[in-house]
Image (cartoon, rainbow, N blue to C red; front, side):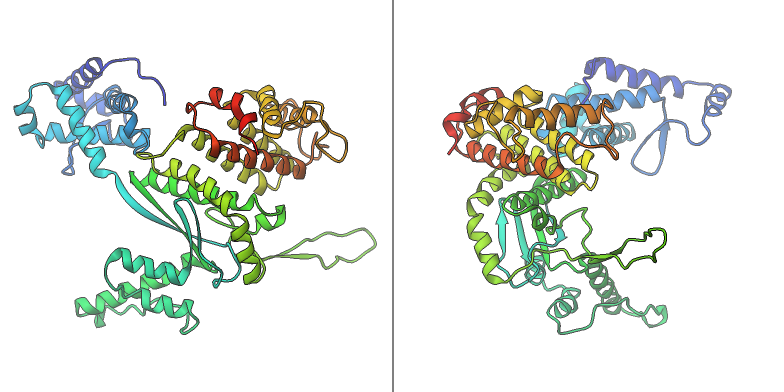
Length: 477
């Protein structure tokens, strides 16, 4: 968020003077001014379909008023984005010009105070508690136990439909055919036959709507047998959805910390390819035919009920700790202790997940380095090395890999030779030998993230990286 250099009074003066200047133009001047714009000239919507012409300087000033309010209102920053607050400020000015708030200004002549109060009320009214749903692949079988990681619940799709109806507080017509399909008792919901001549009642229209909703929901769920559920409190729609999506991705990646690399990649959530895919490689060596070469990607963690129960038992502590960090990320009004450190871990986990899924090894190395750097608040290789020494009780010279690489060499390879040189163009990555393998950087980062989270669980000091890092040796198990 950029710092706004002008105060409210200066910004409001720009808005009023620029808008007044346009309104006071003669017809000829107004015509010449409007001819500068190929489409519509800059304008302020009045909320009733009409608008009033103004200048780009005035529109920027209104947006800056909204952004200045956001900068001075920390409690609102997690509810609304900078773009949204700028748009909302313009909408409020339009309503003021149209006379919608005349009684408010008649009661209080302080324009700035009234405007800020209206803006605060509008943000509060638009901030909703929303339940978000994401189809995903977790366990291959829908009969496996349901589980949660903090605010993220993983439910079978049949039980999810029960939740939808429970939240709606009524029986939903589109749910019945979809539940029957999920349970193997009916065909996949299809598109209704659209014949306007037969739609003569509200009941028939409702039946058509239900068929469409059953089909579109079924298409969205696809082959996924699990739904991730996240309730996000008090945020505007766009920021709420982004928050929920990140929470699910991090929850899946946190669960994957307890798995091997390939098993972790079978867990799929928002933004991942969720369908089974058969891939063929077309290649040929001179003097030979094209070989049969294929691979099948079947997402979802394989195994039986025993494996699923064992995994959930084994990860109970991890899921609890990760869940507390995710709770701080999602619930900005009541985040619990040390929310900033917990959010830092969540953001590092996000980059770690991106590194794990990244097919290009040199890009994966960059992302792993970013994840480690986030944990130290950008203290680069030196900070990461200090962190790792504290987390694991190691010296810089201690060997940490099968090829004899020391801890210091590993950190240097991942951060300096990897993240810094590759991302800044000092080292080429394509078809080049990397300073350290993707597998090592992922395994190393996973251990750091796990141990960091374990120490964070025991920490009760100031919510600050500089206070946390020095006491990590006393917190490790």
